[in-house]
Image (cartoon, rainbow, N blue to C red; front, side):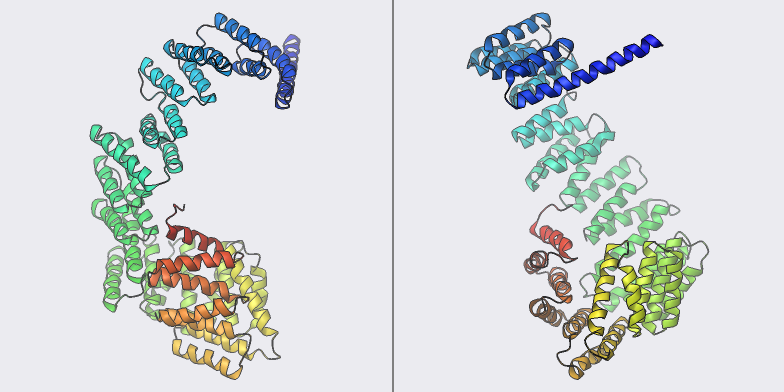
Length: 601
């Protein structure tokens, strides 16, 4: 044991000294003191005979000193000792090339490649030796020959792909990345990352698609090629083609439908609702009615149809009638239970927000909340929506009771903060500004940035407008107008807002009144009037807190409702440049880049 400890001590000491010498040699080399570096590097190499690194650096130091004779003697000596170390011929060739002896250098390079043995380690070392010298063609030649002598065309496919990438040869890079990806399906995500990183244009992605299609014709049962082709279609935003590929694979490999549903999720996020609906319907038509995937897909069909109908705000009563019937048929068939809880919650929201049927929405949510098997988060979200709808009906007591329950059950959690914010907003509507202000001040430290920002805005708004006059009547009138808006009593809200300006001309609430009226016009689909007011605010009230909100709202109108993408892009750009500190700035930049055609992740 004692001898072992002594050995261990000496070994550790040797490693530490080697590390110190290595760092010192590096410092000398970097500072141009090549002679000192060479002395240390030679000692290190003699101690570590198997280290290519120290020998290579030693020769580089001699070359830097222009001691070519010594360098050549050392290299020849090593080649004599290790004739099968092909990388030594590259070192020798580089030495000759530095002396402008190109013909002799090329002979050494050719000699290394010609005598390449079937040894993976030697092949890799030789390839890396050429790579270090940026001799990409010869490195490619090494790996291609290595593949032949190892009788494995995939063995060095990644190395060859990387070299073609360095040369900017995209077509060849794709070819060998595809080949390399075929070695292990578990590594497929890694290669998707490589493709995503290196294929920057639609032309590059189209080249990948073409090559994959050819491969699939050659090997129709190869799942790797099919997986990659599906992914390419997604990257090209060709969701219908991705869906077609996913459905084919689902049938061929007798899968459970998850692959197809995932395409539906992606298409839904991209607002391609037609494709999303087709994907989800495939699941409901081809998979077991008893599976959770079936229920979820059925819910997503209705969610997608609702989005499809309402996204442009030009839907008809007939559209809503049809969708409502689908909701009702589903609930009739599957009932209200833990499996259908999300869909039932969405049905209640549909009734309240699009059918203006608060009574039935409340009945549905009450049944859901009272269900013992309902999930904790669905119950809490249902209580929040139930409170919202009670507030819309004017039942403030029931609303605050429900908000308070969620706040208590979800302390220090996101839903608790949402409930607290809504409760504070309720008291703001009721004109109890001091209590509301206290809650907003607490919520400034909310964990969710959106709630925190909204709480800060509300807190500043109340403080600004409470301190303008000896009376808080204008602010009460404004909060009452906001409540009327929440309750869909738009005409009364307009009257209340107009009366503020009439009774209190040039009051500090002027921009807020315009902003609220713009929001009302937007709800009523009067886009021209909404834009007129939003434009007035972000142009003439630049220093006010509503300016960036108005600019973002105007940009959204142009993007989603008027389909004027150039104007939307212009306003998004204005927002993140002129209002760089705005909470909307990051999102505005993202949307600007998307509209410009950038590949935004």
